[in-house]
Length: 127
Image (tube, rainbow, N blue to C red; front, side):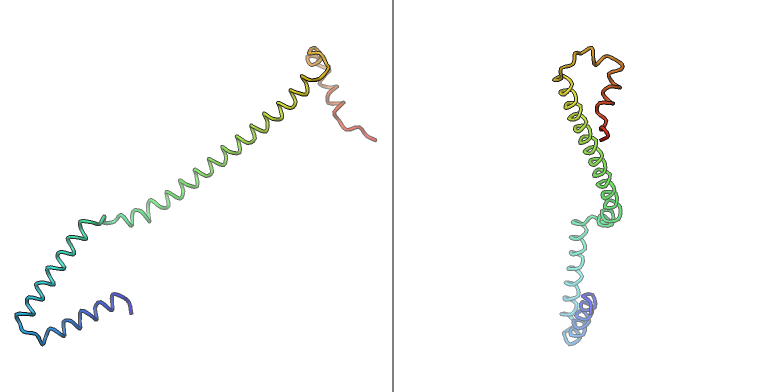
């Protein structure tokens, strides 16, 4: 039995119980009941936002989920870009320090054949 069914059964029992009451008492009870229902409708109309639940759950929530997914995706891409650029800067810094701390003169780095020599000397030697 649901809560609504229970409410109907209680209302029916109360209606049956009023048959034994005098007519004047029944009319006063009916008027009080109608007044309470009218007051309840006014109070609920003042403090509710009709359709807001539907709007929030069916319209805003899916869009909020999509917006959150996009924000997470953009943050991930930006974080990855920042991480890769900082790694590249660290590698360049290491190479520059090694080159500047070496014994070769600056003109050796400007020589076109020097690049070929570097590649040949850095290649693994067969044994």
